[in-house]
Length: 132
Image (spheres, rainbow, N blue to C red):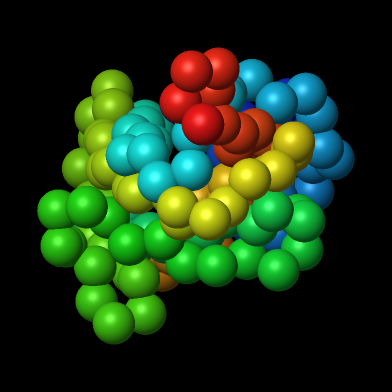
C-alpha cells in the first residue's frame, strides 16, 4: 500500500520474481539517502507461518536486503508478517546513506506455506533541496 505498488500487481500470483510479473512504472515516492522509511501492506488472507523480506535495488536487478528498524529480522533479513488479517502492517527501514537513484525498486517478499509472493514499488532516492 505504501509506497504505492506497481500497477496491476495481483495478490494471487505466486513465484513471479522479482516483481510479481509487473513492469516498471513511475516513481510515486521520493525519499532521501539515509532516511527512515515506513513500508505498509495490508493482509486479507493471512498465513500463520508468513515471513517477509524487504529489499532495495538502485538498478532494479541487484537487490540488497533492508533490515527493519525495530530489530525483528533474523540474520537473513526475514521477519514475521502477514500472520493475521489486518488493514495494515508497518515496518520502518533506513535506506543506505550513500544510495541515490532516479528509479530504485523497493521489493516486498512474502513467504508462506502456499508459496512466495513478490510486490514492488518504484521510488526515487535523492537529496532534496536544502539538504545537500
